[in-house]
Image (cartoon, rainbow, N blue to C red; front, side, top):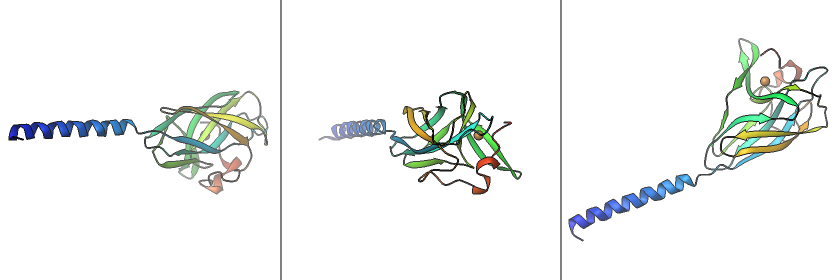
Length: 172
Ligand SMILES: [Cu+2]
């Protein structure tokens, strides 16, 4: 090969390699699974509650939770909770990033699915379909058990002092 030909050969090789890398990155996949879903029963006349679960992305691409649905709820929001000035406060999130290779626990005292304006009460022992909508994976539905306390294998509460009725779910 003369010098000019070598130069072209290298250039073509670089382009082919770049193409292969691009093809590989396009092959990156989201592989989401949902587990340990539970929702608190409504209490008395209250029609607002919270749902929790574990989201695992065992794929190689990121995804983002952007919405959630539960039957008979007027709205369902993604919330985060935390202590601010000694008071447990909740804040609405526009979305929740699920990085590849991570498990994201939604648990009391932390990120949760806020269920607002149920048209009928839900009681312990019921089962409720919880649908999560992701940018890449689309809609995924899991059956959530209605329970006052986290079922076995559910993510640990973020802050046990602020579980249950201590958590203010109104006025936000
Ligand atoms: Cu909330």
